[in-house]
Length: 88
Image (cartoon, rainbow, N blue to C red):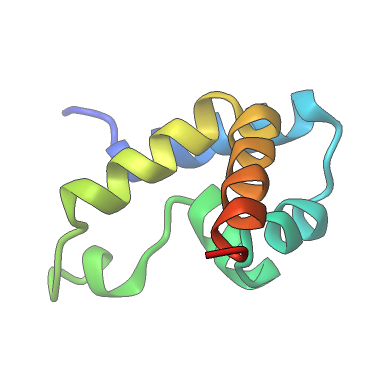
């Protein structure tokens, strides 16, 4: 049986967050997500997906994977982008 990819992603996200020295709340604030959302992601739990009522988009999975790979730099990059975008 193959491991659940959402569970593996959650482990990666938690590991990267911990390596960056951030609490779940700090990541949630920087990512503009709720603490609960980060908790669910780290647990590999997305209710609609788990019960088979939906599936994650490629875009969502790609963004989350990039964030999990290098959270500190990706979030700093996002903040720089939105600082410039707010001037438009």
